[in-house]
Image: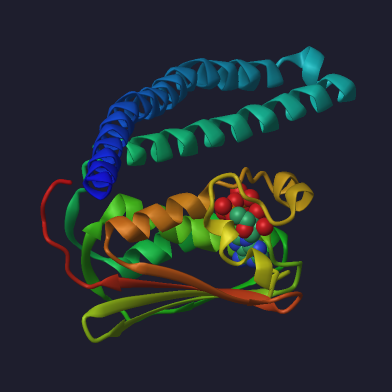
Length: 264
Ligand code: ADP
């Protein structure tokens, strides 16, 4: 009798605790959902005042009082740099908040990834030239993959921009695209500062910056690689990094050549 009473008691206790934890999960999930929606709404709302501020600063910059006064010019330049930094932070926050809501519509369609790489190269060229970095391109003439063109272009931009940012002047950055069976492999190699082995996994975390002062100086806020990882995952691909400190890093992205064309 004692044994069956104990078994009954334990059974009831387990049942009650499961019931309670299930009930407790509902408000926690709702709170998380609310928090994600708040971040998405807040970042969306911040975009308009920021663009108004930027255009006002641009107008102010043209004023004679500013062009002729080095101190005012310096202040305006500082303001402009910070507003630009915040605009990019807000846009990255919005991308990640939307990704959390799983309501992002993917526009999956066939496109030429070589063409996308070339366009990104053109947009980062000025930064590379200013640092005397040799940008090398190693791609087939044309390689058609199925994916979200805008997102994959953003992924290539994040990797190339980082490679240039974290490479000291006179170094080199190489981007390679190859087809390997049913996969498209994209490699971005740099001869930059490299990443410490302990930090290799953490650099894909939100707001993680291996070298905070260097990253901030470069205009970074630690969301680029989190977005890159999300983009790769939504395409059912993989992203890895190999790196040696003071020698350089290689980011490798593997993407299936074709995707199911459907909305997520
Ligand atoms: P950030 O805006 O700081 O560049 P990211 O999420 O793009 O943020 O990268 C996170 C961190 O990973 C960076 O702060 C930097 O320390 C490190 N990192 C990223 N790419 C490279 C690279 N090519 N070489 C060395 N370090 C890198």
